[in-house]
Image 1 (cartoon, rainbow, N blue to C red):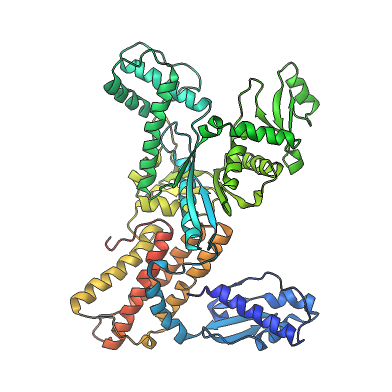
Image 2: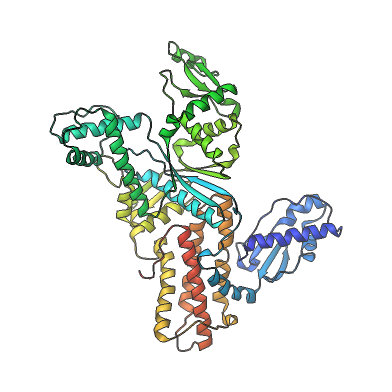
Length: 569
């Protein structure tokens, strides 16, 4: 099936080239331009403002440019009429007969509706979640999980071969602290009077108490003399199993789990530092090269660290790669990891990161540039924070109390579909309020209910017509009315939405569209009946065929968001 915005744009591009070939327009490079549905339906189905852009290079009034474009427009079956509106807009109207026939095209496409080929032959990687396995998945990571998986689904719909990757942070002091924390809980489970240390290095989650009891059941007191290392490995394995199980509840499964430890084991981090050094981007100092006098005073007497000279790439200040005690900071393995990504041959690498990683991702991109790699293949989506709202007030989350602290809690309180939709239905760069009351409401105020109920209504029609013996075989689609055609116009925008979302990595556009599509459908359901006595048999069959196409569209949209496709509610 054609993507209508792209198809209209190609018509306009062909018309401009034809006008240039006929010397009706001078030679100039055709700029990028946009064609999209106008805000008001009386302006047509698709609109272009390219004539306004071309007025200056053409040396003509926008209206005259628009007239020439329209004059040279090639024929297209999907276009019924083209109109020009001041000061130079070109408005297209879709052909009703062509629209009606799209019912069959939609049904034939089925689950592959608007499967595009933009990414054909290309590989994309989406890295998301990547939480340290030091505890259950926090709600703060949930939004990135949903956005990352939704981007992967949209890129697949655009034709990419997609790999979902989880960067498994199992190195560093946090993991050592996890092992030490489990060791204390284990000794306590054995009945030993071990005090919990003061400070922020002890993980207090009840999950460690559960792990400790399991350890005692499995090994008795045989681990009592062990240091933190085996406890770290045990906790890591158990915790990561829990994380994977949680993600599976919302239909997220990763293809690759990249182990951070591997970058240390194979020496990749030191190879990267050596290469950066050879390229002139590493130096040793107690402070960075551009340090202020105040910074120099603070650094006086300290041991030198190893720095990454990243200011040549627009970073505000240089960053430490290796601390004075010889321990790498997280910047060094991050650079090594992204070097590995690019060397795996991905055409597109998408990172889903929290707002606290904004500066870090810029430093990593600088690292790619310093290494001579194509950092433009790396695209970073920065996620803003999520607040939980109940009865209009923020729910204060507490690690100790466990109040909606985990993604599992949120799923239990609402549903997997509510979690997926409500965490997707806002641009990632905006803060998001997750309304717990709205998420469980069984009415049209709940967008999840509103969208899925459209699909349920379609299923209900098919159950009723099957009982009544009404079939949608051999139908005359020209009998469809203006209401049905209005829905088809909206349904055919899905190709535009998938294309735009894939090119701009904006999966929330699918969520917006799904709600708009349901908004067009529900009034039609109330007015376009199949089994009423006053509906002629041939019209009933055509309408039933229409609802079969509507069912296909809603299923496709819901699956693009990773949501279920219920037949009952």
